[in-house]
Image (cartoon, rainbow, N blue to C red):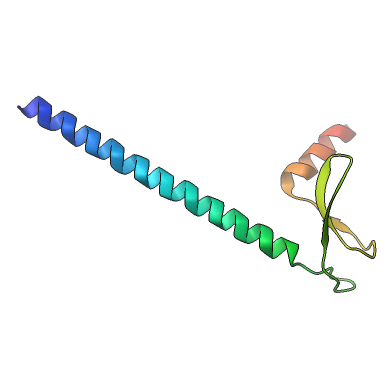
Length: 85
């Protein structure tokens, strides 16, 4: 009887953990989407025009339409630096 109780408690714990993981994953996705929207509404610090999303040489970036600069995420920057070596 005690063994059955322990197994049931373990299963309930596993279900609770799975629900928490699912909630965390959903929350992360919402936060990432919110950040993407914020970046897409970011303005160039020089001319104040909205940055435009573009891809060059396989690298996704947000760039000033007037050519004042481009912003890349950390993964893209690491990839560019690795290719340069």
